[in-house]
Image 1 (cartoon, rainbow, N blue to C red):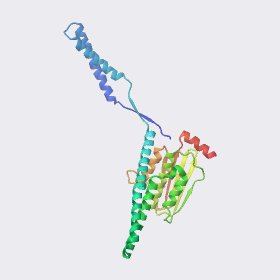
Image 2: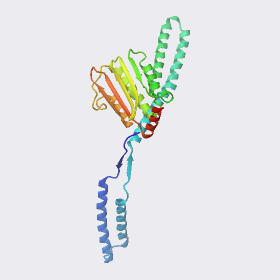
Image 3: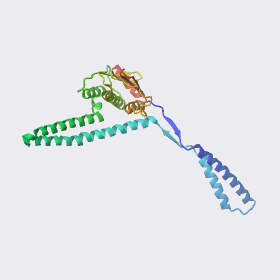
Length: 296
């Protein structure tokens, strides 16, 4: 991954300046005490020794090498993304394994009650079964969104296609996923970021855009992986600072691209749809793998 590493020094300058003044004062006191001792003015040798030791300690503190803290933003960004994905996986597992199993057990009990309930209670049992089925389906959908398990096994293109099929199945939206190149060799964090950005873009479209058509295009370029999500919806006015102006979903997409050393742009205006473009630059080793996969 790209991203310049910056080094920030610890140890305030003011502290160094204070130590220098203390050293000067201590040196002056030490010289005076040594002179008084040599001229037999009754200054104890132990007192002179303490002054000498204090001066040497302060001088050492001034001359020792600066301790530095190396902040490496890209490593911190990788860790943040890893923590986020780990938490998503944990929530997905709890939804799928715990809540999903409880809902399945409730569904079985409801079926048992329906078979034994009087005729006048059958409509209520049928409604209960329908609610449980819908809730279980929602839980599975949320679990799949939180943890796209197919990313590791199927790859980015197939995972996006499965997500679009599932998400847009009951909508009138006509959608297309264009990917004319093999996407083998793409780093996992890059695939996850592209998947999450597409998720957020599609969710925003369904909530606000009233779009009729959606296009998702993935391209392998020499400079990096390109992702484009475009719709013909109502559009909006992109904020200059989405995080501070309430566009949290957009801010999250920009943050994901930025943390990987890339960038994300949004082109939209009321009545003219929305066009989102993200570019994730190749790391040196990933660039080599990408070129090999492109040629194969």
